[in-house]
Length: 271
Image (cartoon, rainbow, N blue to C red; front, side):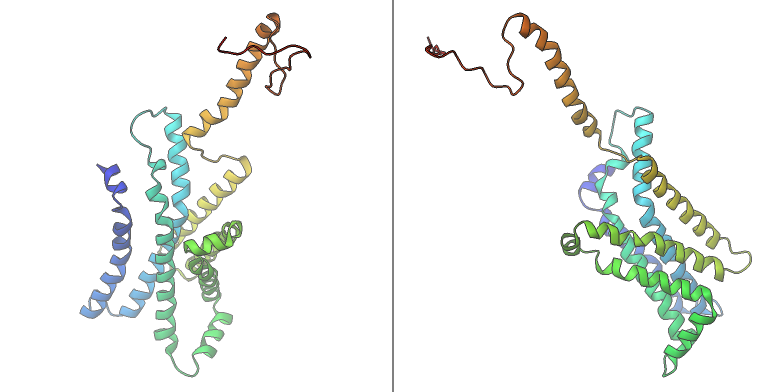
């Protein structure tokens, strides 16, 4: 049943709704006055929390897929369909990344609009905070790195940039590190969520480096058969070659038939 739902394209709108729920819930809570004595601080904290959570979810899609493939091979899973083979899960990375960027922009807008204030001195006050408060500089740098990734997330950009698109989108790891440091430096005593985010970021980076160093990249199950097919054909040719030589019918390596001696005619197959 789950497979049918994925094939019907239900996962994409479901992901959209789930990512939009925090923003809708925050808006309703702010309008109803149910966010506590400091609703702006609550919204700022919630937007930053969801921005980091969705960013890590974006980075975790590929490692989870590879781990599921390795696990299914380790236990010799021969029935059903592995979760790692569901391409619908891979397609959600773009949407998760865009929602993470949207919450990060909202996080910065709430900080500038209510903590600094929008007036003639906004840029000066913001620049002063960048110089005096390192965690604000780290968060702003993370958002700045996410900006080109959001702008080049379309299929047209992928076709235009080609192989450079992958190089550009590796900046997401640097953005995740900066965002994790931003959360750790501004976290208050007793708040463990920032440290959980930092630990998850380190684990995802370690997984990425391990796969690059050791070449542990998941491959489709059909690639194994495709790789062994040439070897099987080569072994069959080696086994057939001695018998062909004994019968005097060995052919050249190129696979062409030898030409008949001059003055002779080739017999027709239908004779």
